[in-house]
Length: 107
Length: 160
Image 1 (cartoon, rainbow over the protein chains, first blue to last red):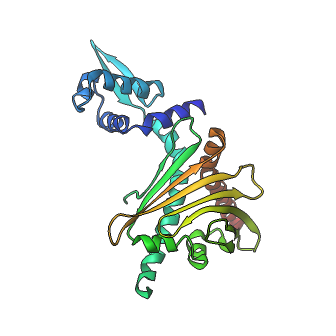
Image 2: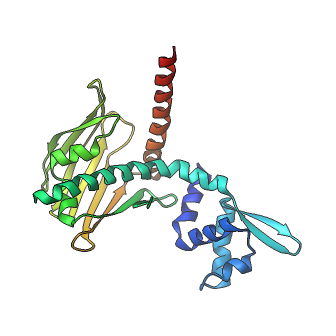
Image 3: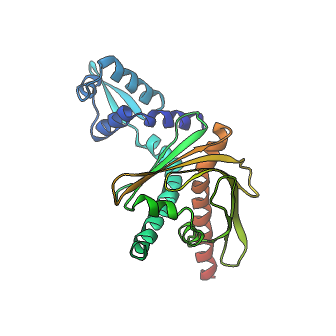
């Protein structure tokens, strides 16, 4: 439970979501990650640290470099938790939209 | 498919936000929340039919709706009072589920035109505690498990 809450915090931030997206494609060094953002290196490092603490990213030493990998299992924990709630509302709202589109001509 | 509905829930907080853009003029989006027949239609699903018992769309008004299963048993009931009602713009209401461990929650619904033909709804839901919010978030997840279980039982019982 505690870990999942940390995960919520981690994905609440748009920069951190962008980092996850980047690292999901391929493992990257902190320098390579930071190059994709206008923010300072320190700011990006802080984001990476938060993502690592809640296990969304995993570190791997490769020679002198540290590479960050994406941990899909952790991401799945969030999806399992919040996705059905989102889906429930999405289904309701899709239905609302479909009903009201038909309603339009009667106005 | 595009994910139109977004849910935002931050760590340790006792609130959440649901946002959605609709391919509808704002007055039609609002009407779907105030016309009992339309509300019943979009709140019903394959596992239950929703019936509006009371819907007083005004300040100090109240509402009550029930969902019944195929056998007519009430499986879900929710009620609340309306604190603010500004047509086409805003509804502030409480929401409480009957026969559940959940406590009353406060809901702010803000309706906003994006263009002539499109609109946006922002639902800000406030719970008494972060734990209650997390439990509420988990509910459809648990329903999903139960339904999968029921479906499985149904299939298995047919095999006998």
